[in-house]
Length: 294
Image 1 (cartoon, rainbow, N blue to C red):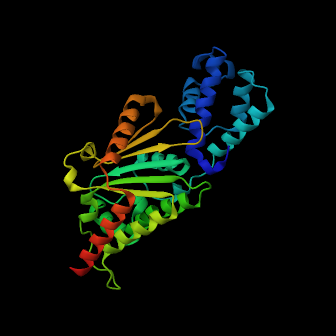
Image 2 (image 1 turned 30 degrees about the horizontal axis):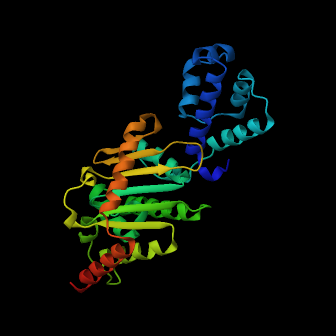
Image 3 (image 1 turned 120 degrees about the horizontal axis):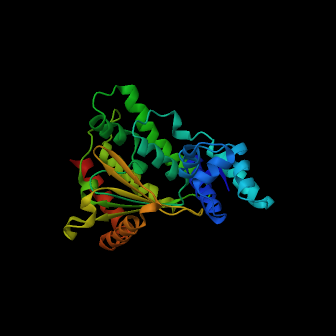
């Protein structure tokens, strides 16, 4: 399993496999704790994926579960080593723990589906656009902190673009997102929002990004409920749902499958309401020209 998945996804894969192996041999978490002279809380943390797993602990578990296949042991050992890596985002001052965990899953996703009703998503933002919205969201932050947080958004984009294979990103945006005139002029006299719109049109040309707009004429739709993101993985891991709110994010893992299925179905329904990719790009360019001429 490639470490390109990142420590959070590898931790989730390992914890899921260790839970499956324990159940296969008919042991409870209490049984494992007693057999290895561990606390039950340690077993819970390992199976919950909240901590990395040392190779020593992994070997003890595999002996207990009677796993002797060399290929399986090697695969799980690579995962265990990957769980203890440091994610690239660890150096950033991220206060929202749910968002920090989300970044770990995003880093290993093979497909990202995202809807936003009012804002250009961070994975599409230019530095200038990011600076403007961050000043509204992070009140009292000095210029240095704003630069760091804006840099995080751009690095997220760069890290995904560097992956092999590059994950597909599909964004559905309400027309309000592209109509709202965010920011004024930059130091070189360019309009922030026209440049942002043109950047989005350029991004889709690499073939790994889709951006589609739901026009105002479609009326009310599910997306008005709020922004959400769905992550899929090539690895043996279910989907992840991330809901954004004013007070922080809410990360929903595969244990709440019904809710994830509901959001996936609604994303597909929203897609039916959108302009095509070509029509969406034409709309963004037209709005950029109108804003630039204002």
